[in-house]
Image 1 (tube, rainbow, N blue to C red):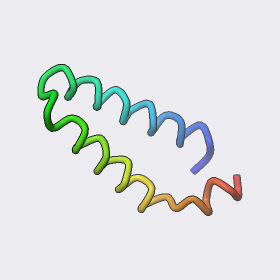
Image 2: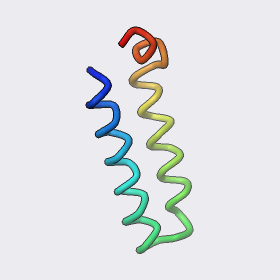
Image 3: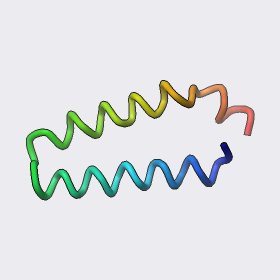
Length: 51
């Protein structure tokens, strides 16, 4: 996984967050936080340092 893929993933999360913000403002923050948490669990910080 390279840095560009990482940025695309983050952008994807932001877009999903914006959609949920529009439709369901109350749960958007919870969903976005849990998505980012899962993302960093899957790709630990060590992988970004080695890029």
